[in-house]
Length: 204
Image 1: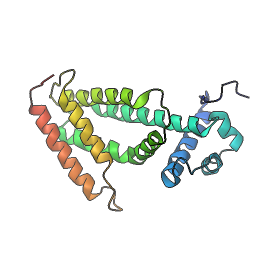
Image 2: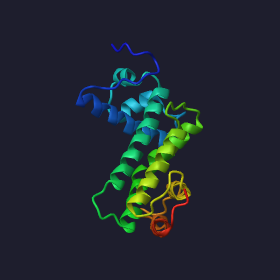
Image 3: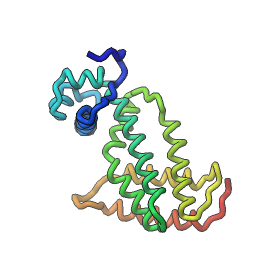
């Protein structure tokens, strides 16, 4: 039995446990997207993930703890994906950067919609959206630097780029193919803004 207090997720030490937690989080994301956080039950999460209900509660004592874990995982995944794009071996072109940002959006779009619904439901996230936003602006500035934009510490271009990415996250998917018409247009907009930012002098 775990001696962790209620409200704290258990971090597995073995790979098998980490794989189980990953399966639980994937199942919860799918269920929350399909039914909403409020409507989905822990029993359904256990069934969808192929996990015994006792094991589920051992890792996540409450549904709210599970929701917080989803919030934290989203932030980690998003920042890690941006770091990989920024650190890509040179040369990194504007087209590469635009395509890379769009791929991040496509991979995390469903997860982000669930995260927003969790925040709207009042789930308390210790790290907070403000902390994540600050980190994201820093990553956007780092990407602009890779492209030659040399943004200042508080450059508005990094903020605008973040808002562009957020707007693309919110675009509806209008086709069964791997890339919707909206995504094609979004990539073109990103490329144009990145080209502009790379040419502009910093204002920060």
